[in-house]
Length: 96
Image (cartoon, rainbow, N blue to C red):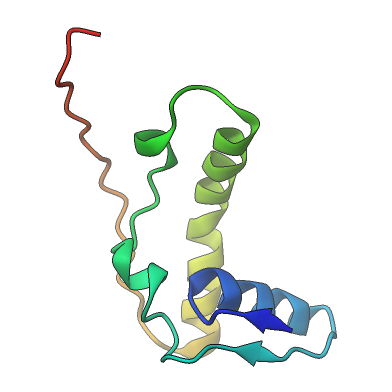
């Protein structure tokens, strides 16, 4: 079973279903209402990373795969997704 019906839980369920697995999805609230909505759809792992790391590499790779994934979802669901790649600005508050 998968706990959480946010973008991560739903994407894992989607992939498992594509692989022919049975999926049970549990969430006390509506899909996408918790952490997914709090992140406002931002895919900016470098803004929170303290420096290079395997986790940062994984997150950046996930972001690179996202456009293809969301395009497939849009095709299969016939729902237009408002996906924009616009960059991010990180402000420096110290000389470092």
